[in-house]
Image (cartoon, rainbow, N blue to C red):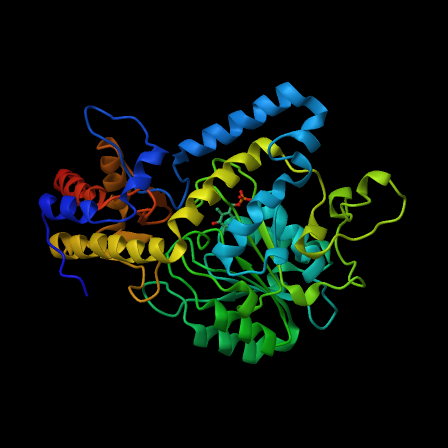
Length: 425
Ligand SMILES: *Cc1c(COP(=O)(O)O)cnc(C)c1O
């Protein structure tokens, strides 16, 4: 355990010794407010803009201008195979084989497309398990899949509930739920990192329990990708999906990622919703009436991808590959550890952290110990001090130092401004 020190000098010294510190200069930060520099701890919601993202978007605007339709084949990164620029990065960050991942669509759309393949209910086995307090989009997606298949969501949706005050999930409760209802469960749709509490779930165990219950497993990695180490190929969920605008810094609504386990690759498996981009590339432009499937996760593609929304993904993945996830994880644990330690040292009587210390990524979910109603006022006071975290109903302030661009000084400054905000309430 590092012996942290509560001082600016200490934080500055830690930054000087940080081998990843130079990445900070490769991002744009929001503006100062009333002479206060930004303390941006919101990379779990929308990551900052990499300067390289700007360049790659401008490159494609230029290619479109200069090459027009020929850009599909003749630019530096031809659009025909542009999505493949994301393959190595996605595979490295998710622990997948390259042919198991693909950049396409957006997250909720991918969940639906993958459920079209992997949620195939029968009258006996039709239920979907999500977690209590699941991200609304995932809940709505699961409910609508049930409804479309002719089931009542009130009966069809099962919740893995938290059985402690902090609201964190215990794998034994999932095991018990499946022991009771497993025969009727068709799909587990669960997160890698729970968005509200910041808890990292035991994804290997989730996949194993799902498999043992005879259910399919889909993972939503929105808060996990670029934040925790993943081993999708070995854990072997049937599918996974993630967005790229959170820790991956690819910008609002950027193109998302999807994973399909290689056990589902066979020429006979045609249980997807097809479009021409899922057709084998070699013969795609013969415009044949018959469908020849592409190999791997690319078979799940439908349309030619929006290049301008994919360009920042490519840029961002380049930075992740350069920094390396193990180094980022090591810094992240240290940085978030410092944040947790400072809050504990200074404000333990006022603030509780509900994120489990032994199962977390970058994010801490903070809660005022006294009257929950004042949490929102505290959050507003932090915003006025140019601190960006986010507020999640009913009572949590989420803060997440992103190891690519946040510093120990950011964390120390946050602790100072948190003190100022607390003194105001
Ligand atoms: C951020 C997030 C989403 C957002 O979905 P989009 O389709 O990208 O708008 C969905 N689910 C979870 C768990 C998230 O964290």
